[in-house]
Image 1 (tube, rainbow, N blue to C red):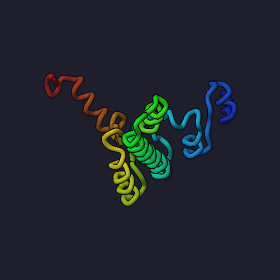
Image 2: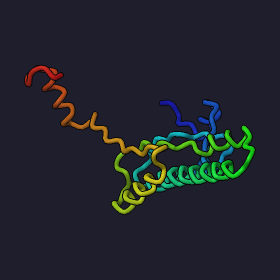
Image 3: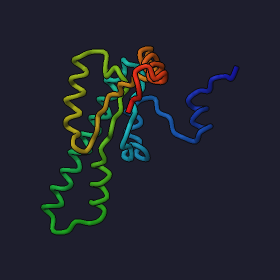
Length: 152
């Protein structure tokens, strides 16, 4: 059997950074500002923590971009530097979260409320894939057998 590699070894092997927390990722000046999408497929109990950090970053970016835009409106000269900064700051973080959304209804409601503050720029989607459920396999077999006729 192949031995499992540590995060440090995997990072070196694939020439990519690794982080011990979502906060560490977001504050990395080389990576954090460029993130525009995330798939949250961590343990269910961490969905709320990770989702909150990403949504709060998206909200922070939106507020920063709005402040820069207000500053530019009040200024007679606006340079290319501010336009670039506004573009990077305003980059929404689109989130695809595996189900279950969280382990409590209260946490799910809080995430949903935060996600509303990132619209219309950002998307917050919960994946409800049913591909591997036994019922799906039964339905596939029935369809393939033409038992219910042709499906369009």
